[in-house]
Length: 394
Image 1 (cartoon, rainbow, N blue to C red):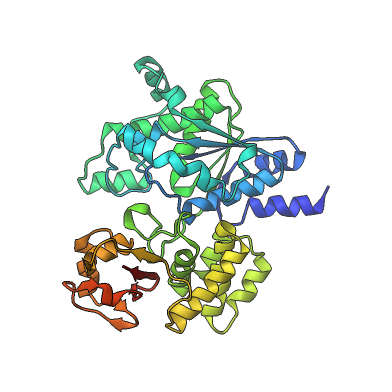
Image 2: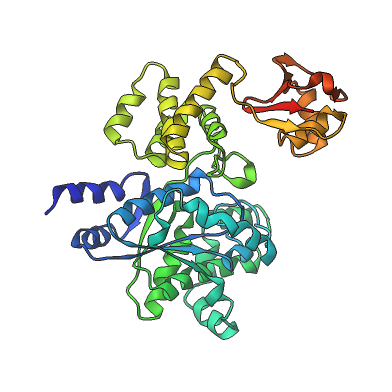
């Protein structure tokens, strides 16, 4: 037995893992050299993939490196219905147009980690939208209502008198049938997906297939310590530029260091133990930030992001390279300029940021949201928050 392979597989089955069903069976199959069909689904409920969801992409990369066949399922049917496994209230039903828009860049984002030339990408609307009431009724017959409402988050909502729609009951059936259609040997998901993942095993058995094994990863915390969630805005997105990504990671609580090092990097466990023993947690956090930025932007970008952070945040310097934003008129309101420079989403948000003391011009705090910028301000550098810079160019 190849001891190196054994160690790699044992780490895959344990690092950042909440539960494996059936662990011994899956370990045996991985050691056998059998090429497995490994399924992972993502619902395009947001246009961005964040590093919490990328924990599973990193696990898929580990399995891809062992030669297994990865199936990336984009849930353009399940995304419309909405999964409330991780929600304490009903997830709104999305329109098909919203889902189509959100999923446009999913493959590109996943390609930051996976070798997409070796990936099978599928869309579950291709088969789920063809099912009728008869087929759905047969699938539903495999489950009881009690099983659904016994789930922790559903039970809490019912006990609190909150609405649970019948639509939500359909979601596990849909995710489970995906496994039948794809004849999955293994499915990966977060631990909050347990019921849905097990539904795949139930329906595979009904259709005479071997039951898939399941690997569930832990749910990681967002930048504010709560569960990382696009709806809460506490995410570090794969689409974030390198400087923003580095800065966000440096802003997370020190208590999350081990969690992020284990789940969001491939730094060895031995090295992680050494980092956690450093006297100043900030030193370990810089290593963490560099490693994560390197995964998504490359080594050179990670080094530049570190330099940018040290200069602009630690030393409070204006960076050497600041994007120029051209103004094609003689004057512009400061709130309008911040929107033009993508430092605020709207004039109202720009005003709030200024009133809250979040704007500096050439290193000096600017509190007048009604200020008008003119040619006299040409070349001035605006700074919003910790990471947003823009140079005015008339």
